[in-house]
Amino acid sequence: TAVHLNVTLAITHAAATHGDTRQILVPTFDLLRQTSHTFTREPGDLIFTVTPAGVGPLNSCDEFTARLGNIIQVFGSVA
Picture (cartoon, one colour):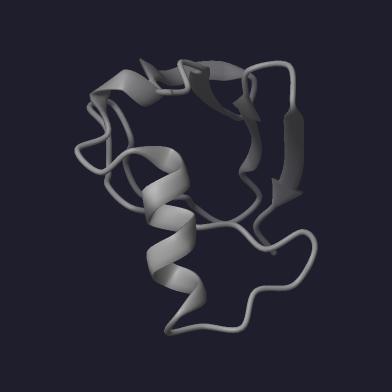
């Protein structure tokens, strides 16, 4: 069964991109299965697969918030 989740990224409190896991060419669970054969994954690891429209470079002092549906929200900043 396909998983359909919203994917969003805000950089320094401004929306940078919005997408959906339906746009990913390899189904989410297949991607997780495939990467587990090559990499050791740990809790909290992130897998970046593409650069959606609107995403650009992060600059010094930028803050970001990435969300995957209502499942996970990640905050960070660039030193």
